[in-house]
Structure formats: C-alpha cells, structure tokens
Image 1 (cartoon, rainbow, N blue to C red):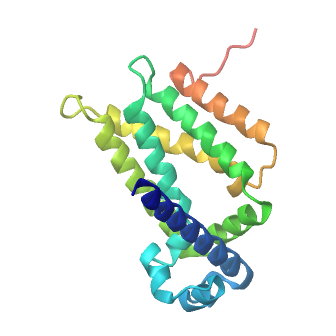
Image 2: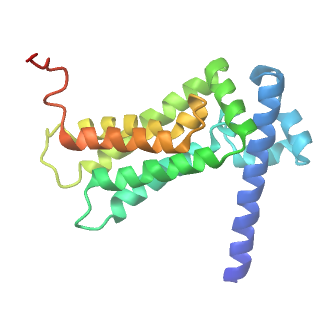
Length: 205
C-alpha cells in the first residue's frame, strides 16, 4: 500500500512539473496572454481539467515551485535544533534554494525572468506569494512572544528580503554561483552583526 501511494505521489509530482515546464516554455515563446490553458493541456497531452486539478490559476503554472520553497523555509524554522538560531536555519535554506535555482536549465531561468518582467499578472502573483509567506512567518515567529512585540514582523520582513537573494541566477541572470553564495553569506553576516552602524560616516584620519 505504501509503495502504491509513493508511486501515485511521484506521478503527481512528475505531471505537475511537466505542466509547469510546458506552460513556461509556451508563455515565454508566444506571450503569457496569448496562450490558453487549453493549448497548454494539448501540448502536455492532458485534458484541460487535469491542468486545473493541479493549478488554480494560469499564473501558478509559472510560479509553481515558489509555494514548495516557502513551505520548506517554515519547516526548517520549526524543526531547527534548539541551539540553532532562526537566522542560521534561514541561511541554510537560502543557500539551498540558490543551488537549486542555479541548477535549472538556462532556458527555464531565462523564460521565468522574461515572464516576471513582462507579464504583470505573473509579477503580481509573485508579490502576493511574498505577502502570504511573510504572514506565515510572522505567525510562526510570534509563538511564545509577548503581545505587541514587533520583532516577529521585523524578522519576517528581513528573512523575506534575504530569501530573494537565492533567485539572483533567475531574476538577474547571474551565472556565477560562487558569487551568489558570497552575496548571500555577506547579507546574512551583516544582519547577524546588526545595522546600528550602517550609514555612519567614518572620520577621515
């Protein structure tokens, strides 16, 4: 029974990934608004109903992996060791996502970048997902904190911004993974150090 459930789950993941890849390619080639769900279904050799069984909106076909990434961050924060800070757990997550993004085929990164830049509804969907992620992070980080404490909101916002660095190979076209890792490490180190001295002009000797 477990093997059958595992097989079904794997097939669902493969179908979902196929639909997302086919749709992203078609959208990038012909324009997001010019491709219908019916055409995506036909190219993937499935029914239109099957597409909607996996994706609630047309935009979700493009940003499919985002929900999984956000869920992984929440999981890592919940399951971190007592001796591990939330910042360290988030740093591991950002580095892992960066590696995953860099490993994507070049056409997929370019297609995603094109759609986010030129399809307003896709950009809006990404923004909506960021808002939802921040809300979930605030709820998680607020556990055990006194009422009125603004720290969870502050930390959630910072983690959201830091997490965006993982997408540089996609959003900025950055191909040097080592450079992306360095920028992520530097950003997390800066936050860990604090921002109290940021912007302070150093005296000339």
